[in-house]
Length: 545
Image (cartoon, rainbow, N blue to C red):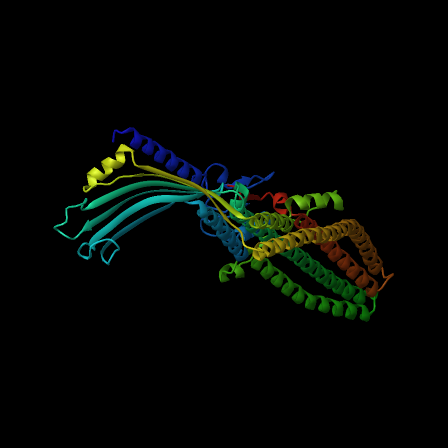
């Protein structure tokens, strides 16, 4: 094609097509800013790779799932190993993963509103109907049409359509030669429409995309919340089992002490230092302690089952397998107050971030429906080239000449009176925005109370560790003194038994205080929302695309 008109049309069409596809192109998942960004945690002892054969101590976020076979339950379990097992096996975490994946897919769905649409239409027909001022013998015609093009809505509120078509018509009267027969009428047309009031602007037209992105982040925070709650359950179960094992050990030692007292009482009765009743007392108390061991072993078994449930381990063989705990409760202290803890919670706590995103969504809807109250005013225009001939090739040559052009420019206005739908939608959006802000304020108050309770529990547990340690040391010294006194015949078995039981209670209280302190510290981290960071667990958050 050599004419200047068609060259100009070709350049115009090429430019429009480039604009259309450039506007709809953008970074996709896994490229540029759309890739999931993993935030590394400090002092992570395990690999952070998302595709390691053994699950790393990391939450890979939406779009990921565990890889490889579940790790075997080792004979010795550290707390970190338990956390890793829970990340891979816990079903609630898997369910939350899929929820975040679904929300991510909805982001692409919202972007689909601005995808270019390719269309094509073919038609073939025959008409024999009377037409005014046309002889009846010339009303029998054969016609057809072919049209194709692309249309797209741009985020500025612009609708663009580029199309090409050709019409065919043939008079079926073979004797008529008074006009062109058949006729071919090609047409190339560019149509534009720009919203000037309602639906004008990038922000209004991207409302659904922004809301979908926020919903994706809300789902990711829901995943993070689920992970925090499940790992909190793992730690509580771990330290619960630690205490059950410590309590069982105390009871076993108490039984050994009771049996030793029976032996000493028998010897002293033989030499006449103590009475027979001391032997009976020692034997009776030893029998009670042997009975208590049965209950202690049952407590250990139930605590083991609770830990396995938290880990998501359901395999019968592994449930029956025995294992030992390696870690002891931490003595770490947390020097913070409610104000500092609240700052951390407002930056990291999942439910707070979800509430903020809900406020953002409500604000987006309020802005959108504020715009929808405006009248619809559109600037529209059309530019076209046309041709006509009794041969297909010649008709396109006529179009190629560029002499037969048409254009159209105008304004289109509409407004419903009194626009009750627009006013109602905006009023609803305004009220929902106020609700979202009030919910955020109420959540802030609840988080503050939870943090105050968590800090109070932690400080109480810290104080109990020192006091129970001193009580155990004093009880051990008392028992040693009572045993010497009993050996010398200066006291009876009741004094020794009382001292033994006092030591057992003190040892149990110390173990309970240690387990409670570790649990209280973990609960504080969960209440602040930084449990994953404290445990060296990386989390991949969605990034805006």
